Length: 249
Image (cartoon, rainbow, N blue to C red):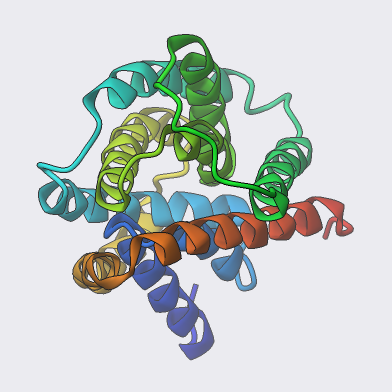
């Protein structure tokens, strides 16, 4: 993990993580694919997890008063179950199949929002059953490849939260998810001394970018914010489908 090209990509990836923790839609999910152009996706995921966790601390502070308590109470325990399933099945579940499924779910959901005609539907209440399912899916896919965004948004977008509460609830939920992921990632040897040393260098640009993301969220009009969420979800989901379809190696 040396050379100016790698470090340039790693710094940009860290900034994307930070801006995502500041509430900017979906950009953090681009970090692992970007870094995977230089190192393996598994190594990239392990390298960036400590960067996610440190950025989460700043995100928690920024959104300490803007979140939906009910959504968190439903999703976070379910996500912990999904992470546990991911850790226990890491050696037998093909990552390619998981990535393809996440991409398909996100693509169908985003297209349904973009192509919908007529007035927007009334916001749904945060129901327990769907929340447990999508929460577990969020934890599982986040464990596999930091790709928990699509299942999370399938559950949360229809709830009609304001942009600040949506961003804050997302930031807090994924802060807990990333903290829980440290345990299986450590058990699977993904938090090596080399990864931690590189991650320590990347924490500074990531932490600073949290406040850049927060600044952008506060200035985006509500309608534009959710349009960006939807189109970013579609772009990332299509990227996941392409990643799953391309030949290995």
